Image (tube, rainbow, N blue to C red; front, side, top):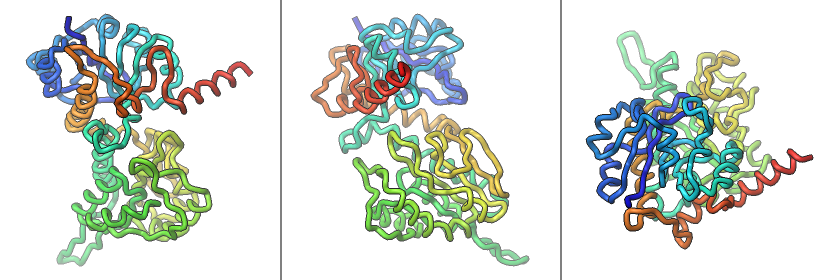
Length: 391
C-alpha cells in the first residue's frame, strides 16, 4: 500500500507559502506515493486546488482526518494550535508519522514535547547540516536569499530619496548610501540588489573571508580588527565576545550615521540575534533614514526593532518584518518545495518512508524520533523548562 503524503494549509497568520507545489507533487506521485493537499493550501502562492489535482494530488476538505492518516506531512512552519481544527496540529499525527518542517524548537518547546510523546519523527529543516551534499535541501539559504532581495526593495520604497545617482538639468542627485550588517546569504543578496538599484553599498561582517564575495558584488567591505574571527561551523557566524561586538559597533557607527539605509541580517543559529545597533546609534542617524532588521524575530540586531512592525524612532523608520519570504510567495514556495523534495528523497524506500540514522543529514535533522528528543540542545532546554516549572 502506498504511503500517504499530506500538505496542509499553513495556519500561521500571514504565511502565504506552501511546502509542496504542483511540480514537486508530480514527482511524489511518480514515486508511487498518495498525495493529499488541504483545500486552499496554495491559494496564498496563487496555486489553485485544480493545479494540484492536475499534478495528481487529492484535495481534502477534512484536514483533521488528513493529518491523522498521513505517513508524511510537509509543512513550512512548526505545528501549532489551529483554530480551524480546534486542535493542536502536533496532536493529530499518528504514531510513527514523519513531519518535515521548520521547527524553531527553542520557541516551540510545547510542540516538541507533543511530538515526542506521540512518537512522531520530526525532521527540522533548520537543523539540516551545512554540508555540500545537503545544499539542495537548505531552506534557510533559499528563503534568506529572497529576504535579502525583498529587504532592499522595501527600504527603497520607504526611503524619501532615489537609490541611484541621477544627473538632471536641475542638478545632480547623489546616490543613496546603504550599509549592510552581515554578509551571509541574505546580506549578499541585499548587496547585489542595492547595487543594481544604483546605491553605494558598504558591508560589515565578523567573518573576514566574506570580503572577497562582498567586493565581487560591487560592495565595499568595512574592515574590522580581526584578533577574533566570527566564523562558525557550516559558514554561519558564531557568537563572539561582547568586547569584539563593541569594537565592531564603534567602527561601523560612523558609516551607519552617514547612511540612508541600514539593513541588518546578523543571526547566530539557536541564539538571540547579536545587538549591533543600540538606541543611541539610531538617535544619531539622519532623519528619514530607514532600517530593515531581518533578525527581528530572533530579538533584532537593532535595540529599537519591534518584531512584525514598522516603528519610527528619532525620525528613523525601523522595519521589523519577519515574513519577507512570504511576501514573495510564488518563488519562495517553489524553492522551499524543491528543498523539501530533495530531503524527502533520502526517506523514500519502496513507496514508503524510512529514516536512516547512518545518514548524517537525517541524523542531524532529526529533532524527535520514537519518543525521544534527539537534538541535544532542545532536550536540555526542555529539561531546564521542566525543572523551572517544578521549582
